[in-house]
Length: 249
Image (tube, rainbow, N blue to C red):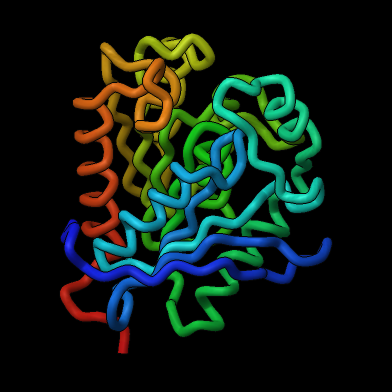
């Protein structure tokens, strides 16, 4: 990542079957190498999620973070406001998520970014969504940071274990062994399931990290070494499967 690369940020609107969906967009200076949809944590499109889009843009990718809570007014919650964040999560449905994922990916299609150069990355709740998105279309790459729903489905969707045979996109999973919400045993089950998927997959586990270890705005969760390694691996995975030395024509 080139930290000196100029980035342009803006608020945008993506049209979905259920109305407009706000999104934060970060663009690199010059023609992007491809696109990355960044799926939010349970707290909404926070400043951390916006920073993630900025990091991808500095690496040369157009990054879009859609508000999956747009049907509820696109709220953003404090990182310790679990009550309202969990309440917002409970409003999500399989149909709504599907519509939102496809609408976000369609933005890349209409902008001239082909599926092979389109990627999905998600954190926490969004990590589950990114995994599901990787079953809907054959994309360049997908990355999940501590996504739940491994052995018990969320939002009316099947479990990640059950979805694994349907993966059509190379997928990387990044998990912390101290994550109390996603037991290490579940991650092992997921590893066995994705190993039989028809695309490249990999799971990386961090023994000293817990849930939310990548979020540097949560000092109680952030694990610096794991976060740095995971980010490097995420960029490497995207580069390996969706990247090219040549920008889009």
